[in-house]
Each structure stands twice: as structure tokens, then as C-alpha cells.
Length: 111
Image 1 (spheres, helix red, strand yellow):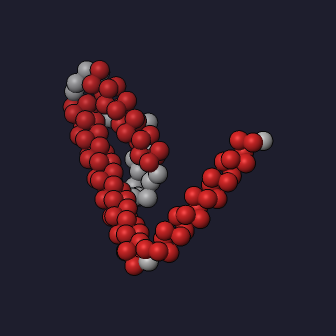
Image 2: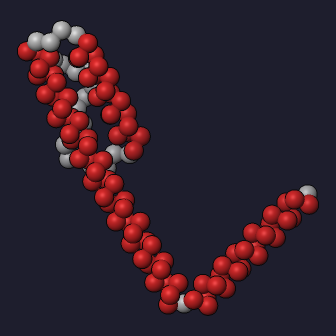
Image 3: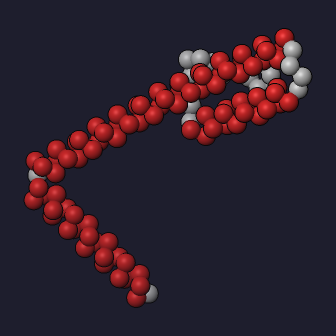
């Protein structure tokens, strides 16, 4: 069975979430089309190809999720360390940001 969509290279792990979602939608549409047709040897090969592509996409998503989670945790640790190391500076920055935002919001409401 020949698919109308090109199979992305296996080494491509830098896909955007939108591209991954589009790939998943294409896989689902292809699976529905294959299942709705008569099953034969070519359909079995097509289903095997779909399973392989779906597994590959699943692995990419898990890898991207893992990397994103590691970055978020590292950022949270860095922020926590900075706050604990310089608590008064952090409070001053937060106070200044709050005053600035408050002044901008009240100015906008008056206009």
C-alpha cells in the first residue's frame, strides 16, 4: 500500500508540536481509510507501516515531553535558588514590578 503522505525521517526529532499533531491526524485518517477498505495482504502491510509510524511519532512526543519537563524543572530550581539566595532583592524587584504594573493599569483606567 502506498501512502500519499511522505514518511518523515526517523532522525527528525525537532518537529514543532503543530507538525506532530498534523502527523497524528494524517495517521488517523490513513488508518480509518485502510480499515474501511477490504482487508488483504496489502492492507496488512499498510497497517504494519501505520503502526511503525505511530510508534515513531509516540517516541518523538515522549522525548520532546521529557526534554521540556527537564527544562521546566531546571528553571524552577534556578528561580528557587535565586530567591533563597537573595530574598530581599527578590522582594524589592517584585514590589517595583507591582508598582509599575499598578501605575500603568490605573493610568489606563483614567484615560
